[in-house]
Length: 62
Image 1 (spheres, rainbow, N blue to C red):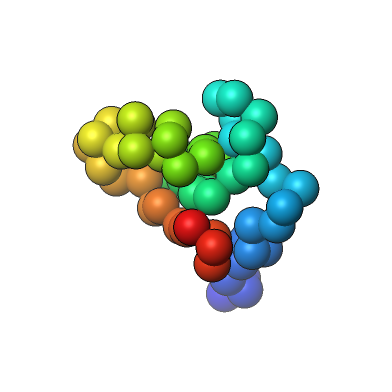
Image 2: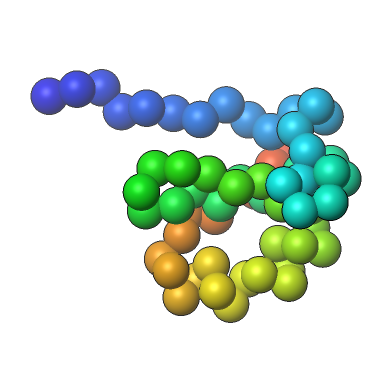
């Protein structure tokens, strides 16, 4: 059985995929891809992310 892949913690260099602000949320898609969002865009897309059963991970400073 292969090991579980883990994703690194968000850092100051991680940027929102929508606007380029500091990323506070990582949305891991069911397909394995990921999107990074600032707090504003995470809230704006929250309903759709829940609808798609996306694994939402927040940074420690979020």
